[in-house]
Image (cartoon, rainbow, N blue to C red; front, side, top):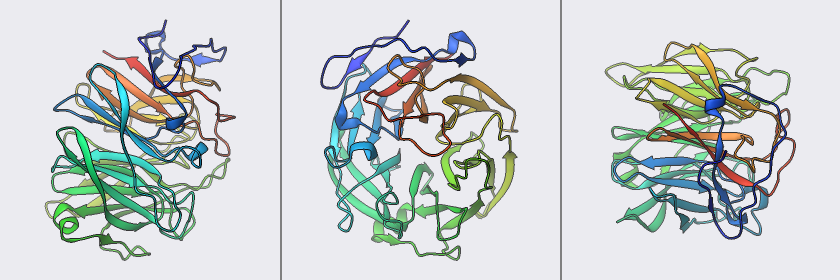
Length: 350
């Protein structure tokens, strides 16, 4: 049933999961990668379209004392290895790499979520300097985020979601230009008066009481930006005028079929946006005009057999859809416990 599997440090043992599943059986996820404890909390993932190399961030929130955060690299033939360590924050002595993307300069830009260690705007945007596929150093290029989360580049600007702020239920999307970062570290400041903020989002308090806001980000082929709230599952579509001014509209508000919105990815082939629903152990898809469908959903599981275990990120490499399983418990999510199966699943799509 499973596709070819790969191991980082140790033998792979596949267990049979007896959980309720739903969706087209052809979309049943299988195990792509099982990580050892040095990658105990995988999160963000991106693809270098020129080389088909994938990069994976592992903040290791579940066991960060024994296993500090690392970055990993996955070759086109599915060999996975460590890319580099990351600089610890001088005040928290931790690093929390999450969303990441490749900039126009060929370097990796990674959100460092410090919110789980210090809520007082300690999160950063890091640049991993790359040469010939190797990391040559890491710089801080922006700071002052609360919970830096998703990262995506378009043209000369990087967009970063900030999932919390000083105001309950309020979150932001920041836009920072390459030119500004090249002049020195960009220091963001509290409040919605910061000129880098292009959108402010508010989270509706629903049954599980999670007020987390702006999370996953993706652009479609026409240059529209999409962002979802982790806490209420609402999806917003953001368009830009000729001067770059953003206009936001609510696209999806369906707490039954999309209670949580995490990582998302626009796929050119079918013009669909794929999104991980962390609360439900599901991957959904929606059209650019907001029609929602379910690709796969399963019950509580360890993910050992490739079923979804709190999915947080989705990307495509060709027709393979890779889904990263975060497996870090939060109130109200289906995932009931952190376990020792640290996994990335894959679904072969048409």
